[in-house]
Image (cartoon, rainbow, N blue to C red):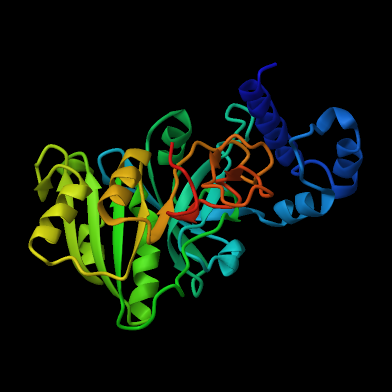
Length: 317
């Protein structure tokens, strides 16, 4: 079996094991896991870690699920797990249906956190059968959530009166909203640049404008600057209107590469690598580190060690 196929096998295997927690108590699952058939060399989770994962799983209630742009939906989810949500840039892993037809969960970034009401908002785009299923979930329905997962943005990396440049592309925009909100509360200024394909895909422009300067680019020029987020950056640089202390970004790899080329590595990037298990066990989402210490691993797990990294720490493929 090839390494890629083995990674996916491990991911599917682990996802199936996580679904078993609905019908087995932990001692029964421990006995099952003691069989070496279920553990491969790459699956480095111990029983303590597996127990911690189960503690992150919860049946939550959908409070809202509405379309906000072309193929794009906003869902509000109520659950006790929200008390653990603090860092912008983290995500939740959502089970689709009963987990039999769609074995792997869907990782979705958290867009907004309301711990007072035990609510999180996620924004997702229909790209396949799993997200199509999510779009049909009704208010009041239960949804199986694992989260919060991953490491987010360092909100303490700037001080009051400093300026953050937020750059988001497409479905990479949502995690920047909670970041902008928290920066605003701490007196940190924000300049936001949002990139989309066309006018009918634009969302949250007005929401970001509440926090500071906001610019939009569309590939077809139907609204805002024609082109990409880097075209907005270039225009602002030429007009001497782009002064910031650090940038924070999320979007597709080509956008992140172009951003780093335009403004350097003094900032944070959130990677959108395809994930499988979502908890760092299967290594399906790894990316290569910019290795300086030969004693450290060459790769990092985006779902567990990320998805947010210093731009200077990882290679974007």
